[in-house]
Image (cartoon, rainbow, N blue to C red; front, side, top):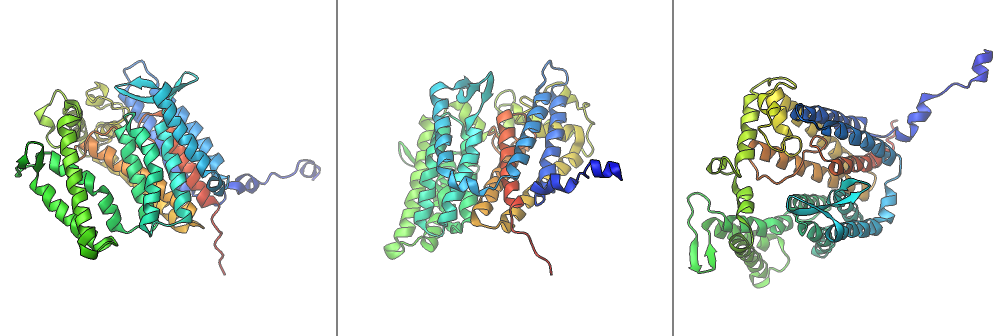
Amino acid sequence: MLLKRSFPKVRWKSWVKPWQQVDWLLFCLPVAVSIFGGLMILSTELKQPVTDWWWHWLVAGIGTFIALFLARIRYEHLLQWHWVTYALTNMSLIAVMLAGTSAKGAQRWISVAGFNVQPSEFAKIGIIITLAALLHKRTAASLDNVFRALLITAVPWALVFLQPDLATSLVFGAIVLGMLYWANANPGWLILLISPVISAILFSISWPLQEPIILFKELALGPLGIIWSFAMAIVGWQTLPWRRFGLSAIGAWILNILGGEIGVFAWNHILKEYQKDRLTVFIDPDHDPLGAGYHLIQSRIAIGAGEVWGWGLFKGPMTQLNFVPEQHTDFIFSAVGEEFGFIGCLVVLLVFCLICLRLLHIAQTAKDNFGSLLAVGVLSMIVFQLIVNVGMTVGLAPVAGIPLPWMSYGRSAMLTNFIALGIVESVANFRQRQKYY
């Protein structure tokens, strides 16, 4: 009795009280994926004198503590500081252009204390916070608010695009579209937003069974592009407010024709041959098996070699012999396919589906629009990166250089994903408690 009185009883509940509303399933799944990702990185570099797997785990550990710290801080504070976040985001991207480190033809990194930091990764968080704050005050139910959100996003997007970092700029686009949709934007408006890009692709690339209609030297119209432009004219007629004299339909049609012709001009006069190959090689990688198509061919062979159950950890022949370039970063999923087979790939995809479902649940149960939009922004970022990375690994999407969240090696990307996780967990942690009677 005397000992009990001298040493007060430690209540374990008091330790976890700051995180009692946290979604622990959502928190534990990315940590598990990070651990598994480190194992796969180790497997891809088992016979090389590098320790990327160790750095992967170390940064994941740091990110875990950051996420826990953010989860116990009220996310509403971000609403008060969103313009500061926006300014810091743009300043960091400008700093890259002025004093950044170049590698592989792009200037994307800043050297800090001997480490290369990629501000464009952290800019994803800045965009999510800024858009969530703007759309929290004014929803995207009107075109004015949609244009306002796009104008705010255009500055950091342009700075990232000029680095050049096409992959991250595409992620920005996915984040914006997802958050606008969640903020009650008309789906037809979102289709019209991306329609010029699709027109540029349809007008520029020689698709099977179509021959371009040459009007004169620099103007060519592809049949698929023409059909798409008229379809967008119908969407414009049905969704845009300027229906008098068919202005909405004419405007949408002209927008897509211009997008297509700009795409043709860029394809013929701006893009270099290696850039064209990178965008189109997934359609037929065998036309350049030792060049642009090499990554995709080797990745598909590795995944196919895994069959149902795979070769086993550290036993994949193509993984161990380094047949797949950049396998520890962009093509980490091919190592999963070879060493754990179809079942391993399916389990990884199911885990990511669970993560996305938990993110969606938090977005639906958040106590305010700001928290809900933060969760949807993170969800849009994760879903887009997952689809594009897995798609390019199996040959269904262009090689865009987008990492697989929490699995691919990349210190800035890893920290970004855990910061995003911590913000969403804060939204979950400070939801209004449900009362049961």
